[in-house]
Length: 324
Length: 170
Figure 1 (tube, each protein chain N blue to C red):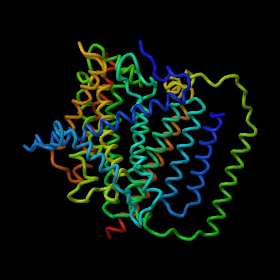
Figure 2: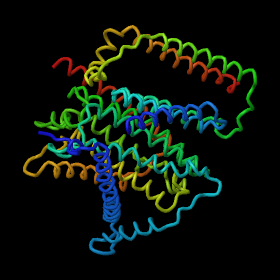
Figure 3: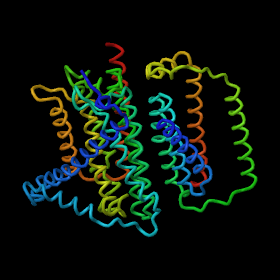
Figure 4: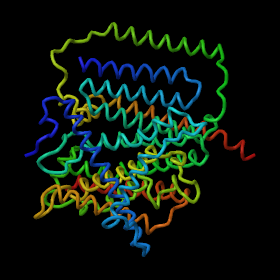
């Protein structure tokens, strides 16, 4: 039986505050650990050792955090002050808001929302505006170019992303993440929707601006893309947002395709996180294996390959569901 | 008390965003204003007990239309040029249109017979299933008409964009 954590509190505003605090704490620690993992993994892939301060190089991240937190927050002279300050918050806020929707265990969830998927697709679109404001507000040509690329990329890959989620909704006839997980008790949907999963993972990698889709921040072309002018913790927020978006996308893929918390022997939450972090390692592996795409290749791949493929997949799913 | 404050916050979002969208000289601010205004509207829907319509509002109007406008703007020169000074004739025409529209809507709302209901509509009445069913049965004609209007808008947009092409080629 499931229990909404929010309903355990008498005061809804207290519940909201506690939920946000827990999620923020988790996302921050997670981002720090993922940066460590990424550096270690990239080092192994490139036959290096990677960060070495402290046990397994873990202290390196603590020092880096200290550096980011204590750095001066510079605002460029010609930047648009208001937009420049708001942008990192707009990029990070959606992911915090949406993380509460995931059913990590079968017993305790933050809140079972019956239109969770629509809400996720809706609110995750907001961070595009944040990225654009960051690029435009910085008043720097590299930042603006990065932002322009990012918006184009995000718009293009959002369509196959949404189209790859729809078959799952059609099979389960629900948009609640809890019910979708329940529907996968016997077998995960990766077995019936493998193409949708591949499209989802590719689109999600593009949506999080990670290599091989990292042209918005291609360091060899655009310095650092849309966050070129950011320093200190404002830059840190973009960094956190990237890793939080990663875990968010992988958690969504886990719930939709890999059966969420279902699994033998181990407790629910453990299975959920094993699947999520396996997908994250996969995304990191992508980054250090594939070269960056050129911009026209990237757009062509979205519109000529992914969109028709997801439409065909949708059509086949519809036909099969109609016949069966 | 707190609920009242939340409602008025959303109303303030709608009004301030709308004002920003209408009066700003810089097109980017106008778009941001539009986004804020639509976000406030989504909040009002949420307050009326319809999270689905609120989520759709955010998905279509903020994630879709506002981002599309940003996209269109950054591909054009509109962002970097100084906006032209307001033309008195256009301004007068726009104000007249706005006043007429506002008057018509206000008249309709004042004349409408709203029923006082004891409790807000149940979540079932606003559920996705109920909405989908209503759209494809009772409101089918409206639904199809709206999709036709959208199709016309798309074709019109393509036509407008196409017209410039032969000139550039010649």
